[in-house]
Every structure is written in structure tokens, then in C-alpha cells.
Amino acid sequence: MLPPLVNVQSARVVRIRSARTRLDPSTSELALIERIDPAAQFGGWLKGEGMILLVPSGPLVDESGAVGRTTEVWVVDPVRPLKRRQIGTLAGSGWSIDSVAADRSSLIATRTTAGEPNQSARVMRLDIAKGKLRPLVLGSRKPSAEAHESTDTSEVRLDRSSNSLWFVARDSDERRTVQQYDLASNRTRLIGKLPAFDALSLSLGADGRYLAARFNVEGRDEVRLIDTASRKPLNLPMPVPGAIRSASMHPKLGLVALTVDGRLGAPSLWAADVDKGTLDAWTRPAAGPGLPDPMALPEQTIIRWRSFDQREITGVLTMPTSRWSGPRPVLVAMLGGVQSQARVGALGRLNSVVEDLGFALIQPNLRGASGYGRVFMDLDNGPKRTDVIRDLRSLLDWIASEPALDARRVFVAGGGYGGYLSLSAAVELSEHIAGVVSLSGYTSLMAPAEAADPSRRDAWRRELGDERDAQLKALLDRMSPLTGAEKIRRPLLITQGGADPIVPRSATERLVQQVQPRAPVWYLMAPHEGHGYSQAENSDFRFAALMKFLQVYSADPAGGSQHDRGPSSTELALQGRKP
Image (cartoon, rainbow, N blue to C red; front, side, top):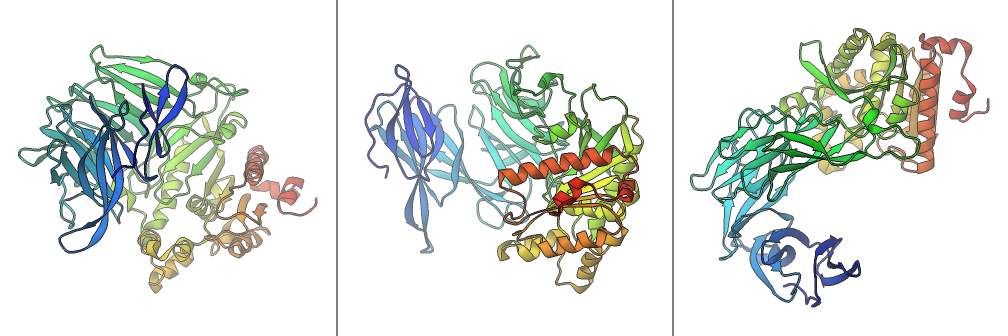
């Protein structure tokens, strides 16, 4: 049961951590109206009655005799907090309220369970008046073996008539698509003529006419509007300068509020009028002191090229402002996660590389990246890992064909797995690049599995390769940058944490020693850091070293010729030696 509530007057309710408070508009002060278990969740509003709370409780003994936690569903009037009622009980924990019927007759609760390779969701329809639960199995794919569970389902929304549900689930091609479920016939429909990319979120207007669906289209978040009656998308272009991070339908009007994120990370608000077909900016992104006007920066674009097998690969290109003339040097920056996807939006410190050094920034989504379906994400598994470097080689060919880019001054950088790809590029593509940056980069693909928690080790082995297989282990050894270090002929910037649990310091320093006779190596080691730099002073120094490294070697198109005159004072300082 809910603990006793403080009986106070309330004009408005806001949520602060685990407490529910009221905001007194006359004093602008917050006052406590109730306190519950810290794990309790705010579940939305039941119009005309109050707020919905999900309160952990238990224990519950099921038919088999097993004991587990339960979640109680309560409705609390914030104006009269002693006026409250329990409307249902859900088995287990981790539930959330996805949608409440417009007629207040029912609500949809979901509980998601992570798993490999997909997650599953338990979806329940709760009759608010009777407290009865109806399990729903959603999605066009076969349900999981667990009773009443849907495979990888989210964003469940009840339509205004309460006759059907809109939701996001994976289809037969492993893409997250917008689907509709008829509650009477138990049939599911796929909504066609939408982007062939993952749907991220749904927002349904209070009148039920339109559904705003947000998609990850090749790394750019875009929105499509759907007429719920015809189930067809509307032709309403939304050419906003950046990525749409959220889309919400107005509760009464035919407006969609958009939060747009630009490369400086400064958000702006836009409104699309569905009936008039217009798009208006409500705010302009603000920049801090010394930063350029976000609206004057070149817009990030999606680039495409063909790889060795004619498969299309994409990436995000960010160009510097026009004050930089001539072909620009290029930094190819790869993300650290094996399945991470580069997306349009905030660049953080990399903005300095673009604007202060005049670099073009390319963030490629090579095979294995998420956002393009399961087939694409599995193209780099195990022995197919070398195909990722071939994708990178084809990107270098694309750069050479672009007049605005200088193919003689291409640098490759990354951290973790991205660092491994960067080092592999130094081995396999040394003639085509000017330098490489590895930030805590893997020196072996076996390192993540060896360092992982036992419960995650098999997942790493499926992705990177099982070192227990002698033939595959031999291949992984050949793919290690340590094995091919003698091929590296270009400058390296390598950073390492002294306490890195994934990348052994000894392996990194062995690589440094092997490369030093043939190419300049800037080696930065922070004794008390782990995998990546978390301390501000170390992170700042690492970025300063990156900027200096790019500045030194981009000034010399010959790249490796810098080695002929010996290491600079900066290099020696970074290696921990006095010049």
C-alpha cells in the first residue's frame, strides 16, 4: 500500500527524483505532498482524477508456488492526496505506462526484458474500472517462447477509439517498424511507405487524427506524420537544420513540437502545422562566448559510397565554415562501440578540430553498425571483421574523388574498438593516410571477451570471434595490430590508461616500441586512468595532444617525412622524457 500522504493544497505537480511535490504559484516554492518507495515511478495522468503511480510491492505467489515482486498501480489526486485508489496489480517489476485511453477506460503497461540477440516485452491492457488484465502479443514476427511476450516491442499507443494499438516492433528484416494491432481481431498490420530504417518513437495526438513517428534515417533523426484513418504518411517535409531528438503532438491542435539538436549541442524548438503544412522555428540555438553562430555553420550531411562488394556504406560529414579555403584535411573519426552508429548532432570537442584547425570530419558507419537492420549489423562478425577495413579503404577512395577534400592529409582516429580499427588502418592502409590516433584502442580483438563479465563473454564471442576455436584464434592473432606493426609507416598518437582492464598497458607499449624505429609515435600514458580518461585534467591534456598532433602533421602533406628530422619537443614531452 501507499504510505500516508501529506494533505496539502496543490496547483501543479512536478516530479523531483523519488518525491512528488507541488509548486505553489504564489510563492514559487515546492512542497512535499507524498513520499513513497524510491523505486516508485510516475506513470502519467488519468484525466479528471489524478496521477498514476507504479509502486513496488509484494511478495506474490503464482500458480506454481514461485514468489516474486509485484507492482501496484495507483491513482492519486494531487489536490486531495488522501483521495486515492488502487486500480490494478502487475506481476514483477520494471513496468511502465505507455498509454492511457482517451475515454479513461483502460491503460497499456509494458515491461521490457533485455536479451540476446533481441529484447522481449510483456504488454498488458488494464481495465481501469474492473482491474482486469489482458495480455497482448504484438508484432508481425513470431512471439518469444515465454507466454504472452512480444519480441522487441516498444512505444505502445492506444488510439482514441481504444480499438487498436500503434507500436514499434521488428519486422522480418529485423528493422524496427511502425505497426498497428486490432484489439478485436488480434491482427497486426505493417504501415507502408515509411523510411526503411529503425523507428525510434511515436506520439499520438489527443484527437487521434495524426501519429508522429521519429526515424533514424542513415544517422539523421527525422519525423514522418501518419494519418491514422487511412494509415498513410502525409507529405509534410520537415527540413530542419539538425537532428530531431523528440516529436510531440499538441493535445488539441494539429501541431507537432520538434526538439532539434545541432552540431554545437544547442537545441532549438520548431513547430510543424499539419493542417497548414508549415514549419516554423520557435527558438534559435544559443552559443556560448567565443563560439560561432550555430545557424551560420554548414549543415551536417549524410555521405554514401560503394564498398568492395558494392554494398552502400554511409557516414556523417561535417565541413568547416567558408573562412577555410582550398581542399580540407580530413579526420575520419570512428566510434568506440562495436555496434555504435555515428549520427547527426552534437560533436562536443570535435567542433574545435573542424573550426579551429579547418578539418573536414567524417564519422563513418561501417558494416557492423546498428541502425541498418540485423543483417548489416552482423556483416562484421567473427572472420568477416577484415571486411570493415575494406569499407574504410573504399571511403579513402571516395575522399580522393572529392575536390573539397585533401586525400594527402587524411587522419584516422578512434577509441576502444574504433582505436583498433585505426591501428588496423595504420597497418593495412599506411600508404593512403597521413596519421593515426588510437585512444585506448584494442591491440587484440580477444581483449574485450577476456576482460568481460562471464555473463557477457558469449555475446562478445559471437560478435568478435571465439578464441577457443583454434582456427579462429589464429585468424584473430593475424588481425592484431601487434602482428603487423612492422608495416606502420605513419605518425601515431596513442593514449593508454595505466589501470585499463581491457587493453593491457604492456601490449600497447610493445606496439609503441615496434613502431618507433620506423615512424614517430606520440605516446600518452595516465597511470591512474582505466579504459578511457575520466579525470578532467587528463582528458583536457589528451585533447590538447590530439589538436597538436593534427596541427603538426597536417601541415606536412608528406606525413611520414616528419620522422626524418626526429621527434619534436611535444613528442618527447608526451612520451614522458625531457626534450
